Image (tube, rainbow, N blue to C red; front, side, top):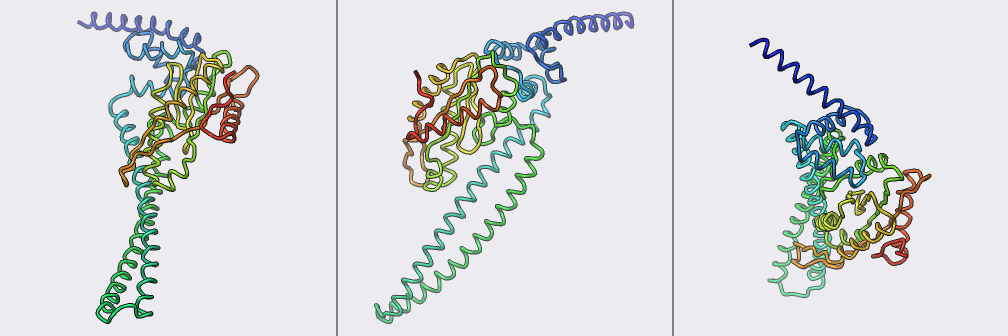
Length: 346
């Protein structure tokens, strides 16, 4: 029995060595650094243990998309990590999303409370004027005095509620900062589910000019007025709807990111500038059909538009130039009236 075990062990070592001999050339071929995460992915690829992982990596190489450290983390988490690691990461993502929603809810509630306080102040002035000018008989005066007393009580309660909200906001802000410290390896934006800015930066850093790289920058038009008029919760629903529309309209060689605030990005590989402009124009038209329900009034918010700036990564450019050029065209689109793609297709 011992002899058979020893023979099996030797066979396993030989099999592992054969897979190793296939793994290293793959790393060299795709210009991938041999850090543990990358090695584990391509070792698994060479072994053929995961058809899903192989399909994902094949798709990336076909679209000339490099394996950035952020993408490697995502693939490792999806196909190689143990269940405890995945569950912990999902818990952090869910908690972050919950905190985003709760914070915006508190912000809207506080705004409504301040507006109510202002209305009560005006009401008090009118009621006191009725009493001063003798507009009513004594019975009405008695009722007015009671209303003033009750209104003042409401005012005091409102102020207490605002103070409680302010305290709660501080506690949530502190919790979010602590969570951010423990989630530095996060890959996704909690609100929209898209890749975050960190992933975009790493993907751009891993790109090469000969891969046909283009960047699309997207900024929702007049987003501040949406927040001001409808509240931050409505603003969040708009962001989610726009993010989904962008992602749904991405071609196979395009990946969407939440850049920050009301800005999004799409990184394309194996593409020319004209193709990226066409992709941006397709997204622009798709966004015009977005409709979001305002839960306060029950009405639909239509007519949400966005402006687009497109740039192509060329030999001799710094990677930071790609972002700067796309950003320049984005602001040119806004200057010319918004809801357009720049540069224009020639």
